[in-house]
Image 1 (cartoon, helix red, strand yellow):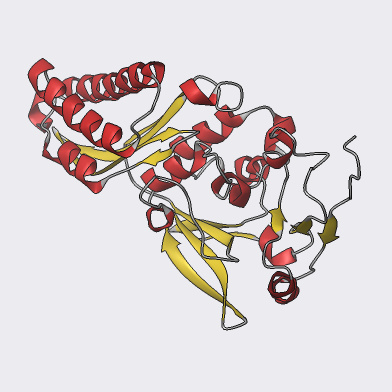
Image 2: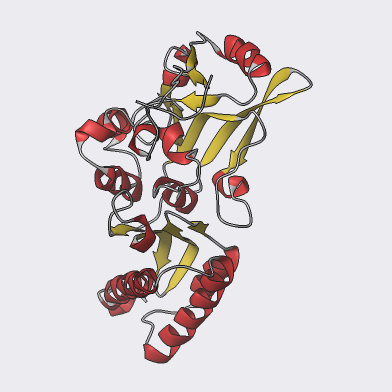
Length: 300
């Protein structure tokens, strides 16, 4: 134990109104959802910080709600990844389900929340990149003029220039909305361990509608845990301009363009991450080429 260790002050609001009152009085508080990420960090407990303020979100009933209609599913920020699997596995996009299953065992997914996987500090999970590829939106609650306001934003709007998820001061994610997209190409893969070897790990999420030999509304996001999410509409537009199957010369040009953007955004990704990124890109292109080549001639 550290000498002079002081236990944190835990606040347990029962609704969003009480949350607003607490955050106004303690604006530097840490938000505690499932705690799976916080407790896995070095020196998380016991803490060296004296008189730490923590707001536990688990008692806010609004954050546990789940609803769906014909167009989308909406999850409160405290809905766990395990609950998402049990309630929406049959209708939710395959890339999202694959991402959840790759995050960890049920010991983790039963505690990890959808809001917590997005709003991690100084570390990026694989989840925001997948939500970006799925055009997901989030309801962000924030304090303005001593009142709690809300705004729905695309997950891409929460990315800063360095690829990190950034919320407004004293802000929190209260809900996440995921559309039941009609895209016949969905891909998610994580290489390496985000928790055990974050400096060398990478994940990619890709979605698109493949219509004969072109892609409609493609979205691709690469995630590097210690750097952030690499996403650009310019890269999406490059994929939109391709005609499949793509051969070596076009693939080399595509790779060069993508790495130019990645290296301009994250100048110190590791050599292994670069190699793994290249492999993931090739796997996506190979899958799209194979899909294109299996389309009957009369359908082209």
